[in-house]
Image 1 (cartoon, rainbow, N blue to C red):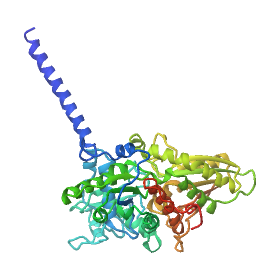
Image 2 (image 1 turned 120 degrees about the vertical axis):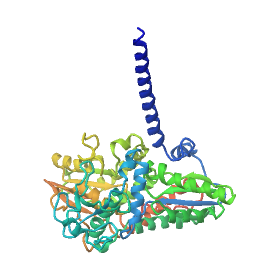
Image 3 (image 1 turned 180 degrees about the horizontal axis):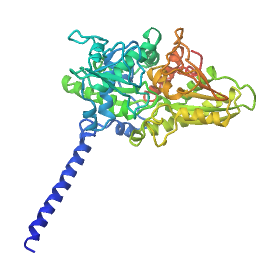
Length: 505
């Protein structure tokens, strides 16, 4: 017995130590994955939910529109800032720290940017466009000397591509950011006519259309755009607004459906921190913050998309022809869906959109109509191996099996053509369809003022992607954004001209 007791105490001590260590690690994991400043941080989502339904701006009012603006021509800054936010908001600690390491110089052959299997490159380029290293030796020569290795695409990332890696020095950015910049430079922007992407210009057209309406309101003294992926530009825009001496700052989003990734855990807490710092630095009172509802909650937003369908949807070839209407969403991975308010927000948006879109299709003559809601991304075999989510590609196949004449997809979460709609999501939706080439770009004579509509065939079914509404509809989109902001402004009849959201541009 006397020998057993010390041994028992040692085992108890070991078990207790292990439990304490496990508890500490669990607490550390929990702590490191909370929003910045927890537990004393300001929770944007709670602030939105706590805002009274009848809340209205008071006194001198400024309007800040948070916008995701992809550069019109390739820039490294956007991708670097996007990947940094991805690791901060969506990837848990410590995985984000490990994955964000700089492992060397990421390289790509610009003549074969979508390669997925090893090959002998003819040229190798870094994300900054350099094909020769600092020592004067071309990267492709270093590959011939065995100093550069092939990096295969990830099996768990849909649409990933293969790249190369030179480990002789750091690349100057996190390896995932370098690879993303290579893909953007050598693949996406390289396959755009003139290297031009319309997303930024079209979004700014929409925001300016809304601002021109809002500035007529007697309470609104100024408006500004908060470029979510250009920190210095965003800070200066907000600083200028705050210096106007505001009593209320209305925060809106140029994205139609709000999420933790874009708004609640990212842009809006950044705005709040800058407002607090400004008040502390200047000694002036911080303005009251109000949040405009998401655009997709408004019937005017559904009417806007119904008008788009009326513009581009074909008529049936016979009265009894069947069609599948696909309301497509950007989507989230299964894990993110469990904790992102985007799920509830998108469900609510679909409830508003469904009937007007169906009515638009029936007005075209489609009496035999089925409606499906599907994700453009994160629902494929690579990222949804258990097939728990419905993808657009699966829905196209189901429509063909049903013998439908038409499967028509409407990207209601995008208001301007971007690298997702044009490339990555297109790959996930169209790969395997006759006539589609992997990461195919728009035609050289594309008119960005009009919808970029794409058509394919799958068995006897016409597969159609309506594209975004186009540049000539951004004023109408701006009217919807203005209406969303007006929901938290004092009544003013001229805020949104009647019928502007539904009428012709």
